[in-house]
Amino acid sequence: MIEAIILDWAGTTVDYGSRAPIIAFKNAFAHYGIELSEATIRQDVGLDKMTHVRKMLQEPAIAETWEADHHDIPLATAAEKIYHQFQIEISKVLTETAQLKSGMTDLIRFADEHHIQLATTTGYTQTMLDQILPLAADQGYHPRYNITSEQTNHIGRPHADMVNLAMAKLNVTDPNHVIKVGDTINDILEGKNAGTFSIGVVDGGNLIGLSQSEFERLNIEDQDRYQAKATAILKEAGADDVVNNIADLIPLIESINDHQQEMPLLLTPGPLTTSRAVKETMLVDHGTWDDDYKELTQWVRHELVALGHASDEDYTTVLMQGSGSFGVEAALGTAVPKQDATLLIAANGAYGERMTEIADYLAIPYVVVDVPEDQTVTLSAVQTVLEQHPEITHFAMVHCETTTGILNPIETIIPVLADKGIVTIVDAMSSFGGVPIDLTALNVDYLVTSSNKCVQGVPGFSIVLAKRETLDLTQGNARSLALDLYAQYRCFEDNAGKWRFTSPTHVVYAFAKALHELNEEGGISARFRRYSTNESLLRQGMNDLGYELVIDENVQSPIITSFKYPIADFNFRAFYEYLKDRGFIIYPGKVSKCDSFRIGNIGEVSASDISRLLNLIETYTKDTLQLSVAR
Ligand SMILES: *Cc1c(COP(=O)(O)O)cnc(C)c1O
Image (cartoon, helix red, strand yellow):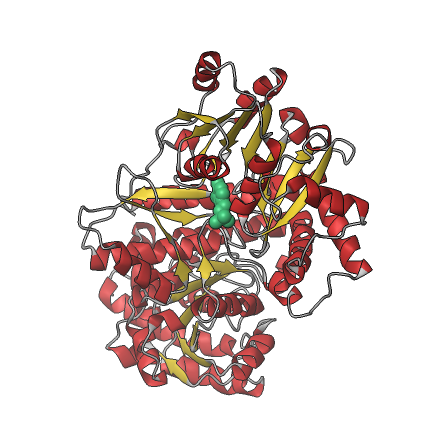
């Protein structure tokens, strides 16, 4: 839980555009005949002011001007003189610029309600701060402690000392429970050095550097451009996240709290992190007999066919109680007739293997195309086996093999086999909803997924998308009553969406909510982009930290990524616990040929979650594993 927020002053909480120090520096140097550009001043804002003066005086052009005009006064003394003048100038402007920025009142109220303590650190001196504090207090802002570098032996930003002192005074010991917020690079570095969450604020900050009226006069595109540029600079400095308005910290804190507390972020291949709204849907109980529920079931069935780019005329959805494997078993056990049929299974991981186990249990005759785990299934490998086994009537393969995260090219294999009259079954469990799939173009007969993968629902049922003309011929095939896909299909069709047997009502409502959220996000292509961004950030970030991939990046799916252990005697359990304590659940590896672990990119997970994860792994890699990292 976040216990404290440590805030900067000018540009962050007061003084929109961080005008006060700029005006005062300009006037102080002008007093000695030196014209400073705003850009020169803004470069190092956030430092303590004496350091800042010295830094500017070191600029060759400024130093030369000083020496030409004031050759009787050495540079060292110049800094003191200008600094003295700065103190006079800033007093004149501090009071005009002490207005709280928009959003602060909301943040203060939120902090109050959640017992989050507020403190500040600043590049101002105590004398300057003493002018601002009563004005801020008049506006309802009373941080408990206000730290200047005078209290830390003049060690200011970017060092951690001021934040450390604030934490000590607030009696907060764990930096994972603290957020440091500021508008400058030095602010971000200060938070990073203290090990807190380091969050940047863009609107009204130094990096945009415009007054409120100047900013508001810009058109939307220009505002976006300024914001994007400032965001990029703060991120580059290592910010864990960057917000526009300071009130945007509120949802960020809620999400950090969720993840640190009762709701960790699952970076797993499903069940995965669902949205709060999806979870909240399950707070209401529903009967299975109800017409609304049956209608909802019909809508879900229709919506899934549409997501697969197919028509309800050609394809249908059969929902099946149980986890994803129940759907695979129902599909295999119903699709393959009891006589005169042989199944070909392509396997390059645990889920392909599982289909062979199912075939064993159901006594389905089968042949396997065995492919190494780090390679994709290819059409030529499948065709070779087909030629050797003319008795083959059915073919099954996995799309994203979650064992490694490899993506098999179903689009080059399935249509070819379908053309040969072979009935095709695809386990697209971990990809449907997150990777675009066109059922019609694939001409696939059965495609299986589940409620708890990329549509981002909770576990409870599996989903079989089936070609009607194929499914219509399967009456009496099933080896199991409960997993009879045909009987389940007929029940839905003949009774307007009625499930056979008790159905997971709460899960279905949550899933319908998740489908709406998928549409709101922009459909599968938008979700695919988000997952792909997560995956590439993760892969590149981990690479920079020295972690190697198990499979080639060209065959990598955006779903889940496998990494080799960084050292031979890597203690995965300890690594797992370290991340779990900080709100992230990752997954052990499943490949047989090397020691690995996996990190999922799917679910309600954003780029900023991945960047927070990478910061934790960086710390762990350096401090616990004692490995040097390039990042
Ligand atoms: C998740 C998953 C399954 C189903 O596993 P369950 O534990 O039964 O839900 C099947 N195949 C793949 C590729 C998967 O990722």
